[in-house]
Length: 429
Image (tube, rainbow, N blue to C red; front, side):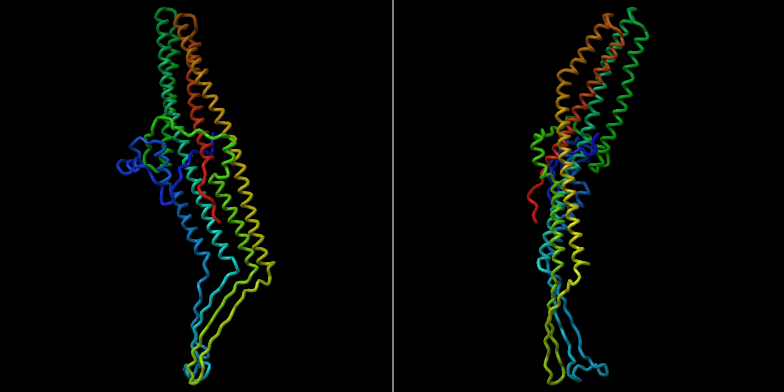
């Protein structure tokens, strides 16, 4: 039905996800799977315990440290040496020009390169920050999908059990007619068969619920399926479609793509600094031990010579430009995909809301009234058992369809809530 059902995002703090007092008690005082979980508490647990989010947090720390390191000058070089040392005696005072020397050199990369590399690493760190927010939201969406499906199966089982009571009323009516010689044994057996066949539906729903709870346990990293609260969660109503589309630019995954584009564009500027030479400044001091000989001082400047830019610098710039264009295309594609997803999710939300209202106000009450009237007519000998069984099935079908509408309405609201998630702060260059 849905391949990526989004939901509301709880913003993580970078020192660790802060849990409420209730969640802390849940994790410390009792096993997490032994107490009844609310959806909000489960979302906090999922964000806290997910290893993928922890890896992204460390990636942010890595890039922020790297942004400081790459903006620094290279380490200076210290040179120690002995010059013009005679091999026959290895004496430092046998002749002039034998000396011991010490030198120091420092390389200065091409102008502006270090600053640009530091800024690029900072933007890459911001991209991972937004990726963390987006993936946190997606994790919550996955949890909500399993949670809502588990609630659906729980309520569907209650609906089928209620249907069993309706079927039992049909069996009693068939028995009453049979005993009064107005009905047949076949009708009694058919009514009993319709009632007993519902046991298979309950068994199937129990298996589905076990699967849903197992998925929740997997998301929460729990050893056993948890006991979850039975009430439907109150998800926030979505904004209008126009507001959704206006807020898409702040969606964390889209902000991450935007930051990656900016980092790639900075890579073009870094590549262009390759047209300028690197400069190395060196200074040295020599100690001459021959009597009467002076000591020596030397200094120099070395320059790299980009003499063949067509084979190196031009290629680096072209590669960086292609990478920047690639990132821009990815951003544009993701923006279009999110805009389409928002329009589709909003249309589904409006459709499910209208269908659920119609089901509550018209269809389900009418189906129940039709069953009651048909059962009364059958008991009075004015209708056949087929009509009773048919109206019974209509009541069950409409009741289960109503639950599906309620579940899908909540899923659509969660998806719109995900799309309305906003990143915090501006992307710093």
